[in-house]
Length: 213
Image (cartoon, rainbow, N blue to C red; front, side, top):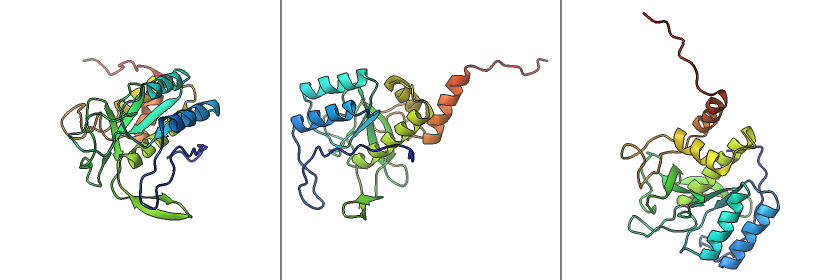
């Protein structure tokens, strides 16, 4: 998504074996966020989900205050799940997943906090030991949106987190019920559209010079 971006890979989760999700602690994640911010990260991708943690919320608020854009997976607990964190945190851009037909990933968590959607079903992605694997879930979708954010920051380095959110939401392609909804948020994230929205906002409003009759 953003070829010029530099990735700071932080091991916040211990491996639980091939094909299994890793495990972590709040302290490990907090230390990881602190390290990322201290080393100049402009966007932090959080492809994990769990219950709310007050200490974690404080760390996210501090990172956002320093201009870091926070992106997280909505979670794969299904439509009846309570909002999961960090996606449901107000400082975070919550990302859900769509399939190849732009339908919602059936196991996506839902709610008013969902910001945008991105492809997240049967995605070919890098894997350990220089291999590739097919992956499905909101974690994959969140990573793509983090890439779009990096692309926006490359085009306009001074963008604040709220400006990034506005660019993503205003340019998203509406899916599902008309307008913003609890399934897709504002719709499918559009990298080109988001970049165009930055250019349009930089130019400002254009006067109507059409001829009058």
